[in-house]
Length: 202
Image (cartoon, one colour):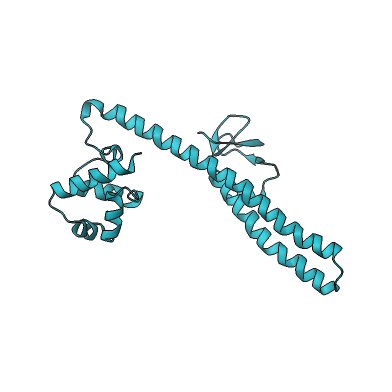
């Protein structure tokens, strides 16, 4: 989506209706700074207020995301294009998140192993070794927890039996046996267990 184009469109509609940034912000219960960010293309309206914003500006969500008023002849095609664009953006963000998962996982492993290595090879008292090793466990556990959350939220898992793709609950991902990103889970559609691979697209 072209944020600059959307921002100019919001400003154009606001001015056409005779509203200042402050007046529009008050109607939406937000700050005028947020409106300014939209209109300068630095941010997009939050999805929670998008419908209300469109109603105030007398446009559709599709108009807003296109940065222009869409005539009815092209409405369905434009909507389809916007949906495809949103899907592509989600897939790209999911790929970035899964890359971040590897980075966090690698750093967490290093944080865990360095204190263990120091405790094993550097001469010191027993309680000091325990303290050093324990100090590595806490940040490592936090890091691994983040990787699990990222893996659960980014992309989908695919059932080997019915090929249904879905996002499982975080607890299910935590408890499932796994090999890398492939987890042994029960499919919510066919109710059968299988080794389900992580996939990006729906």
